[in-house]
Image 1: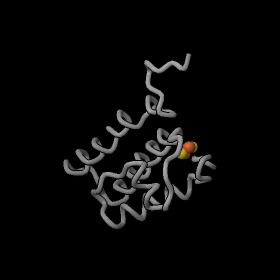
Image 2: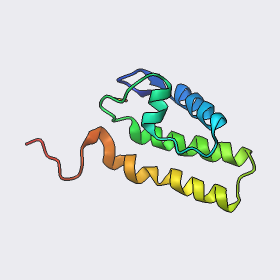
Image 3: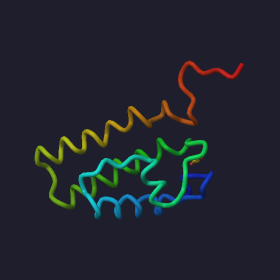
Image 4: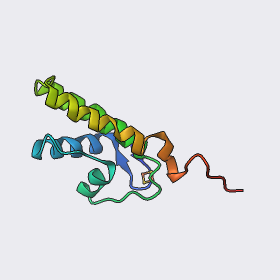
Length: 103
Ligand code: FES
């Protein structure tokens, strides 16, 4: 499934990039720009970022679940990952904020 129409990036490519980053450092905080940088791409309209954030959260939770997560350190880390929704969630779509009106 195509997630980023500007860069033609699929869901699988994003998942694979996240797993490679987690293999390098399972505690790093992964954000959409970091994923795109790892794939030598850039966010253009950034309308895909909310979906990328949900993918980051899902893949990270699964990764740490397989690694036997559940301790305090893992729970705290996953809370930080889920907090990305506040920064890059649906409010972020196409960089339009609530007060923005074109006309
Ligand atoms: S849809 Fe991904 S940058 Fe535009």
